[in-house]
Image (tube, rainbow, N blue to C red):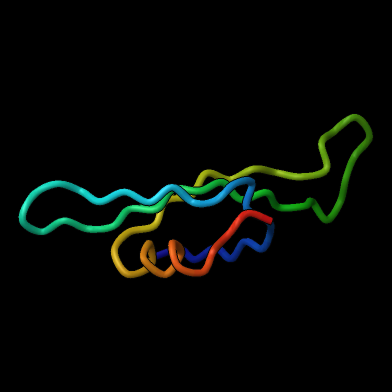
Length: 68
């Protein structure tokens, strides 16, 4: 299993939804803007990552993560 640690700012508040059915689970979608350490001429200075979290992690994100 691979592990990635990204540190940045949320571009907007996370979107939380719940799946349908007997065993519904939380799903959080959010976009993270991460500043680049090295910038070349003519390139943007940050990258945007679309992220998805499930179950307990999604509930944690819903409670504590806000734009900014």
